[in-house]
Picture 1 (tube, one colour):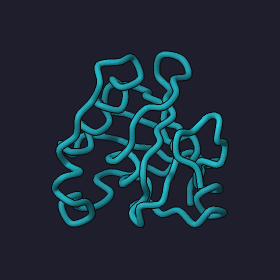
Picture 2 (cartoon, rainbow, N blue to C red):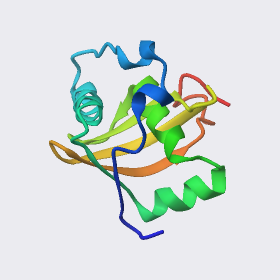
Picture 3 (tube, helix red, strand yellow):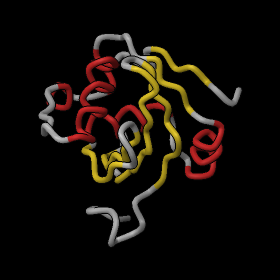
Picture 4 (cartoon, rainbow, N blue to C red):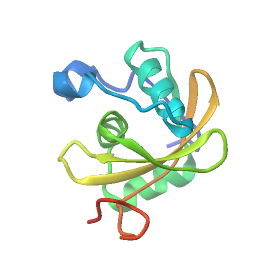
Length: 129
C-alpha cells in the first residue's frame, strides 16, 4: 500500500451503517467543526480522505479495516483538539468496539487519518478497552 493512499467513497454508506448513524448531531465547538465538515463531505461523496503511512501500519497491527475507520468517524465524537485542524475522535468500529482516530483537516474537503488506536488510556478517553 502506498504511503498516501487516497480513499474516495470508501463504501456505500447506506449498506455499511444503519440509518440512525447517518443522522448525527454535532455540538458547535471548535473541534466539532472539523468532524462535522468531514462527515458532511463524506456523505456528499466529496471527501478526499488520505490514510498516512503510520496509520496504515497501525491498522495492520491492530486489525482495523477501512470500514472500521468509516464507522468510527460516523459514530464518533471529538474528545480532544490538537491545534485548529487536528482532532481525536472516539467512536465505535463496525463491530461496536471502541476506536480512536486522529484526523487532520488539510482543506475543506481533504482530510488525513494520522493514526488509529484502541482507547486504552482511562484518563484520556471516556470509553476504554
